[in-house]
Amino acid sequence: MFFLAAILMVPAVACAADTPYPKLNLKISTTVGEQSNPAVMAKEFAKLIEEATKGNIRIRVYPSDQLAGGNMSKGVEMIRSGAIELAFEPVDVMAILDKSLLALSIPWIFANYQEAEDSLLGSGGDYVKKILRAQNIETLGFIHNGFRQLTNSKREVRTPADLKAMKLRVPGGDVFVKFFRVFGADPVAMSFSELFTALQQGTVDGQENGFDLVTANKFYEVQKYITAWNYIYGSFALVVNKGVWDKFDDNTKKLFQETAKKVCRLGNQNVVDSEAAKRKQVEDFGCKVTDLTPEELQAFKNMLGDYYKDIKQTYGAEACAAFGVK
Image 1 (cartoon, one colour):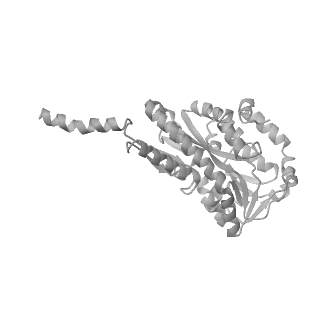
Image 2 (cartoon, helix red, strand yellow):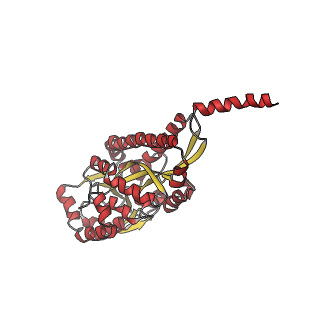
Image 3 (cartoon, one colour):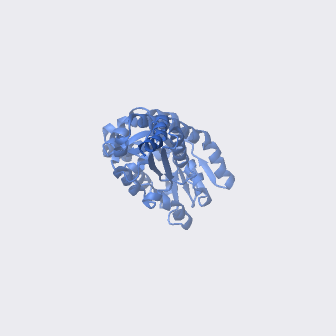
């Protein structure tokens, strides 16, 4: 009997030697739909981890905040508590944990994607990691959410006056709400999972997201007008609950870090490479896409003096300096 038991144990030992990773079943969540870039990258991350560990570590992807019932804020709290192990979460949504993270969302602080990426690979990313670590969350990397554009069902927006009384969905936070109030609009904080229905039913007139989310979630089907003004840069952070992270052995941590680097590089390139095609997609559908002239854009910026002063004071000098806000 002892001999038989010894023989039966041999395959298990050999398997462990072949794959030096623990057996884990994990969940990764994201706020956006399954066709959006962050959800696609979450699937890629899960696939690469499963392949590298020969199936020992399996990660199931949950788009649209399914595990949180569509509630973005609850999803962040579930990451912090460990009820969800991993996520691709918008940095602006995670600002419910520390409002200073919204310094990344101050309008027109980055001229292009390279500037934004450089910041998140440097002082900006270091700041986000420090803040989230204090909230029991480790950050593995960042991908572009894209530059936010304005869409609406009412009229072309070329001047500040065009925004007057327009009801617009925003993700929440002073940086968004106070911005639109400067121009007399009516910003409404709302979870992303509710947005398409709210646009379709006319609960709100418009919203502000990049071309990736506009196309992946088919907002263009219920939004006739798009103003391309790159007013705010957004990023998704690939995060893991710190309690979960601390239990990983060094091999597993290294694998997750290296895989995150690959996936985030790919996710960023996806956004940069596909933006023109996604803009063309909405134009071909029949949406009117308006590019503002430098003079038209300046008319908006000229009204933001007090707003910038207030926002920088709200988020603090350290956060603003980390993202290069002057």
